[in-house]
Each structure stands twice: as structure tokens, then as C-alpha cells.
Amino acid sequence: MRDWLVEGAKHVWRPYCQMKGAPDPLRVVRTYGARIVLEDGRELVDGIASWWTACHGYNHPHIREAVRAQLDRLPHVMFGGLAHEPAYRLATRLARLLPGTLDHVFFAESGSVAVEIAMKMAIQYWTNRGESGRRQFVSFLGGYHGDTLATMTLCDPEEGMHALFAGAMPAQHVLALPRDRTDVAALDDFLANHRAAIAAIVVEPGVQGAGGMLFHDAEVLVRLRDLADRHDVLLIFDEIFTGFGRTGSLFVCRDSGVTPDIVTISKALTGGTLPLSAAIASTRVFDAFWSDDPRAALMHGPTYMANPLACAAAHASLDLFQDGSWVGDVARIERRLRDGLEPCRGLRGVVDVRTRGAIGVVEFDRVVDAAALCSRFADEGVWIRPMGRVVYLTPAFVIGDGDLAHLTDAIRRVLAARD
Image 1 (cartoon, one colour):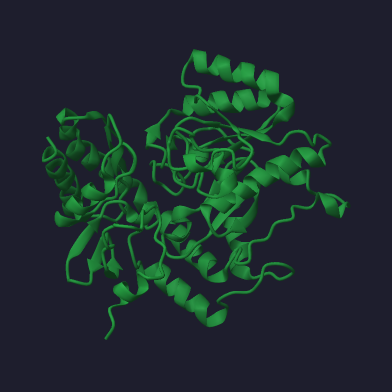
Image 2 (spheres, rainbow, N blue to C red; image 1 turned 135 degrees about the vertical axis):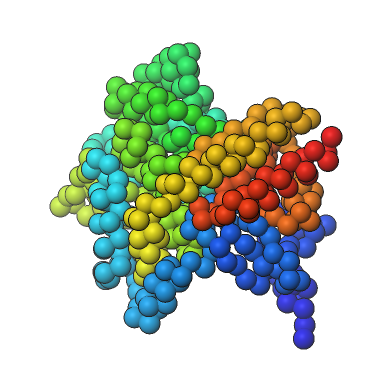
């Protein structure tokens, strides 16, 4: 029998990877709970829940059965001109979970696309209101909003991953997050001077994720809402990382007391089983598209938008959130991560150790060798993939205390061995 990895490696282009000379990826044959099972029989404790998606653990029986039942009825149908119950019920369910009038759900497949849709919504909102010059965005240093061309312009230009594409798309305005009076005043002045060109402010509320796992308080969001209202620009929350319990709140926008005009969600929406995302607009935004003029419609439609299988998975994931047990699990994980990672503070090069909800971070003073560390972690029986200057944990909420200890012990051992 031919080796599937050897044969396929001639054709597969892997993500975030210099293909020439890169080590082979680990061969996965099965997943369950917080575990990844390799072809050679080893089991790795997954510390990052497949980029934060598998919040309920892998292969959860409730989600699995929901998808299987939907597969028997209706795997997929186009969403243009047709409707199906899973999507319409899911839109209703999401609207009820979100604050204010965030009632209008536009489905897509990936987080990056959801952010692009939100950008299109914001630009066309102003165009439909007769202000066609408002086509630019304000985002923030330390932020990350995706890898597609338009979303790259919102990311921190110093983050490095997207530097190659500088100038490929019109640049946006990436400013300092308003954490203090100086930054608030600078943003206030900027909006006052550029209001006629700005469509929206875009921010990851509470935690800037892939840009460095940087935390900020709800007061920052209050300031952004105030500035957006004062200068009459839209406010977009990118909750693709923070949504669905990761920070300890189901949604940051729900518990912070700050409601954006548009929110984007994805990642844990389906519990890490199938791709699904959404850009969810307030009635204020939606009403600008409600018109007798067909040109005022939002002309966008991903081929697999509102895929019934993905919607069924999302319903099952929301069922699991509905029972409330995740709240105690996230609090437990936060305590365990804080206690387990704190000893790393004294290691060479470590500048900070921080936790929030089911997020644990060890930050270094420089970019780490992610590939080397990833390999050493695998030797310790854990799957942890550092990025930039941080080694981080975002485990499944169902992870046991023993597996959590395994993760934090492995981090301490591997990082200490660098000294």
C-alpha cells in the first residue's frame, strides 16, 4: 500500500509553512475529547482545540448525531431563492442570544469572509445613505482579522505575516487601541479629521487573538462605542475568537454592555465540526438596505452559505452552551492555567504570563521558534502551536484537570530547557 502522506505531499500545499525543508506534519487518525490520536498510536493532549474551534471537545456525540440526522434529510441546497429550516431557526436563535437589535444574520463559511462581508455592509450602508465616500476603516495595533486580501489590511502591519502584501490593497488606518487618555484623544482627533472617509471601526473585543493574545478591559469598548457615536461611524466587533465562551462570556458584546452595529462570528459556532460563519447586523444597518431599489441590496452570496449540515452542528453546539455547564468549566480552566503557567514568569525571555477565561499565554520578548517548540511539545505528548512571541493555550472546555496539568507541565519543562 502506498504511503498516503508521501504521495499526497507532492500535491498538498500546507498552511503557514515554508514547504521546502519543512518537517512532515503529524499523522492524525482519530480525535476524541481533548485528544488527538496519531497513526503511530501516540495520543496528544490538544492545547489549542484546533485553532479554538473544538470548544466542546472533539467528536461530541450530540453534535455528531445532529449532523448525521441532517445528512439523511438534506446535506446542502443553495441559499439563493431557497430556504431550509436549520438556517432560519439558527438565525433566530443567534439573534436572541445577541444584545440590542443585532437581529439580521448573513451566513458564510469562514471567519475571514464574514469580516469581508461586514466591511461590505459598512461601505454600502453609507453608500445607500448617500455618502459614497466613506470606504475606509479604522482598526488597531495588535489586531488580526483574517488572511484574505481585504481583511489583511485591517491587521497590525507590524505583525509580519502579511507584510509581503503591503500595497496590494488600499491601506486602512491601523491605530493604537484607546487604552489611555492619550490614545483616546488621538483616535478622537483622527475621527474628527477623517469622518467623511471612515465607514467603520473594527475591533476584537476583549482579546486581540492571533495578533498576540492581547487583553483589554470593557472600558476600551465603551470608549470605542462613544467615539463611534460621536463621529457617526459604525462599530464592528470581530468575535470570531472571543465568541462562544472563550473569555468566560458567551459573547463579549453581550456581557460588556457595549453593542456594536455589526458582529462577526465563526470558529466555535459549530463546535469545531464544519465551516460556518456569520456577519450579524443591527436593524440600523439592515434598514439602509431595505429599499424598492434593487441596487440597494447586498450583492453577496457564498456558495455554501447556511449549509444545512453546518447549521445542524451549530444548533447542537448551542444546545450544549444552553445547559450552562461551560461557565464553570471555563472558570476552572482559568484557575488551572493561571496556577500552572505562573512559574514560567521567571524564565529567560518571558515578559508576561496572563490568563482570561479559557486562554493562557506566556509571552516572550521576541518571536519564538514555533516549529522547534511545536516538535518538543509533541515529544511531551501535547499539541501546542506557538505563534509570534507567544506560547498559548486555548483548550476545549471539557478538558480534564489531569490533561490541563499535562499541558502546563509540558510548557514549563520545554521552556525551562531553553534556558
